[in-house]
Image 1 (tube, helix red, strand yellow):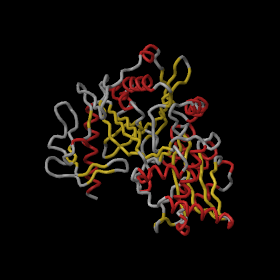
Image 2 (cartoon, rainbow, N blue to C red):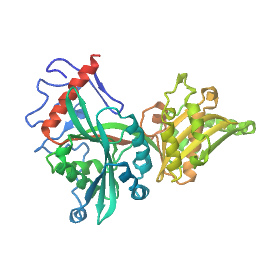
Image 3 (cartoon, rainbow, N blue to C red):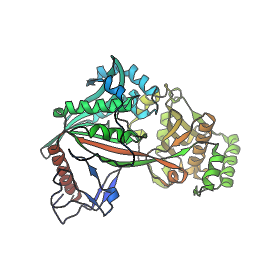
Image 4 (cartoon, rainbow, N blue to C red):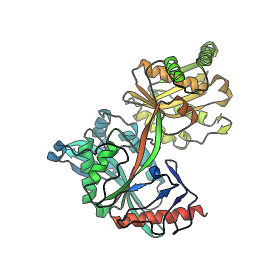
Length: 444
């Protein structure tokens, strides 16, 4: 990025976007903090940390202090860097995932192993290895921070990264464990002690779960590490407090424009019931691993036209990954598939996850030739009824602001990105290089 006058046309990504971003002649102030302006919107200015400056508190409220329990009983941390050592973690990792207060399918052993194997095969440039941090207390595995180490070089600038696994995950957590304050503090202390072995920690899609962001800020504010926190996608969600008709009534009273009223939805529901005599059926598949050919049916639906446009392939790009996930996560009760069929022909599908008392939407598709039935909407209503009857409390649409999600959602879960630099000089070089690289790409 150049000096005073020129301006970058766009700086955007899937997760966040700042338009018209410009830097002053010197992009750093006297304390080494990066100065950014975002279209005269100070609430969107990126806040950066420097030694001697207070932590960037993006939300009001006090910053919690580490618990005395964690200080008196410190954790030991052991990095895992081989596939063999990773396999030995399976039992402990499963135990931590299944007993988590806020379960996250994207932080399970099976999800991490399946996608890591795929990414390892795709890796072509630079060095890449596992860097899974195992936290132990009294010799027992009490937490796991699944990271990847990558060393990459562009234009002669080498960056050694610790980062989240590159997978299509909508939520990430720093650590799988039941002591967030103590384990975050332990991981930050480990990063300080090993800062000569890495340049940048880059964690994306971290979900804000109460005071998680504040705990990170508190731990980092007592170190010489510099960091910044960037807002990322919001994930709309809907409380499941009634059957689908009750949910529709509540949203309608609140002014939501659902596209169809109660009468229209009931008429469509009755039509689907009448078509049962013609071979139409709707079902919730709780054990996808026991349904031969199920993934192939979902892949077929991906190839159908939706709203006149071909869907970008997703499941079809990673069939071996999803076969593995159906077999592993399916057996452990994490995966569900809602399917509408006409005879043997798939009409619509909705694949998602069961995380504690929440249902998560992940991928859906429908055959456009059946659009008169509104198959996507009617399948979603079936899932709401399933959730209500089985005691689920929330339906999370995950990442995305598609109109149908916005119409049905009641609120949002926040995610953010955390970047930590080992030294202030590396931070300056990395951000300056990033600005130059974006200018180079913009000029292509």
